[in-house]
Amino acid sequence: MNAIGVDVGGTKIAAGVVTPEGKILDEVRYPTPHSPEKLVEAIAGAVSEVGDGPEVGGVCLAVPGLILAQENKVIFSPNLHAVEGIPLKDELEPKIGLPLTIENDGNAAAWGEFRFGVGSEVDHLVFITLGTGIGAGVITHGVLMRGAQGSGGELGHVTVQATGPRCACGNRGCLEALASGTAIGRRAREAAIEHPDSALGRLAAKRRVLGEDVTELAREGDELALSVLEETGTWLGVGLAGFVNIFNPEIVAVGGGVMEAGELILKAARREVMLRARPPSRDLAEIKVATLGPKSGVLGAAALARDAFTGEYVLGG
Ligand SMILES: [Zn+2]
Image 1 (tube, rainbow, N blue to C red):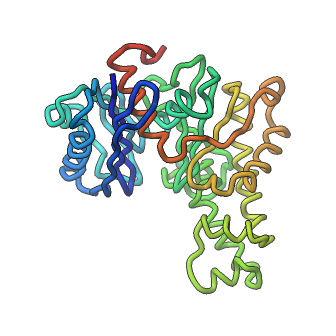
Image 2 (tube, rainbow, N blue to C red):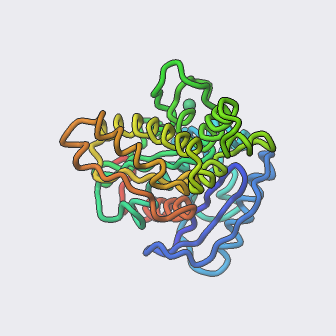
């Protein structure tokens, strides 16, 4: 039977009705309201819209932030405070008339890549998505690693530099603070001040430089932009080397908007993994670009909803 996946992001809500084979039959997108009541209404509206037609067995919400799975709540979400503390299952099930589960958005996207994308042929996958922040999910022995409370797999908030820059979570030197799109923008603005005659420096004199500007200038051959991406890839690799040692994955998939830069970041990351991780894990792990793009959240959430109502992949093992 079909299932509905909802990807609740800081700027938009995407809901899709998805077949067991991972085909999206219908999809809607709405801007994310930033008040709790309007947010619940918008999610319910999006679900009703796509669920009006094909037979559907359940819904899963992919939500940003730290979740308490047993209470079906998000307890901390720096990019979407409106979602914090809402008893999502109790609020939404009566409105939509379908069984509902929730999942961290990184975990849901990882599950999407595992079931339908770059990880569909393996049992051990580490997935990491580089955007404004860093989301992640870990699949080991074909099971999504959630931890005791559903808050596990937060690889973006692993400390990789003890005295590093401040992260959105409050800690210093998280991987997110060193290898996200936000980190690229910050690093580029600092580099532009030191090298005002570079293409990056000239752009920074006109307006605020963002992560995507760096990729564009790097593609045009600007040495400074290339070095910013290289440094970002190095920090990413420091993180990934640790994850390779811990999880011994077959594939490390990297997705998110920052992957527009592709090999300009991944080359340095692979080098760092080879230097720092231990064999045999480092020789097995293939570091690849994720293949589903922004659809991984909806696809993964729908697959998780289906697993919940069919019991096909038993939760937690
Ligand atoms: Zn952090």
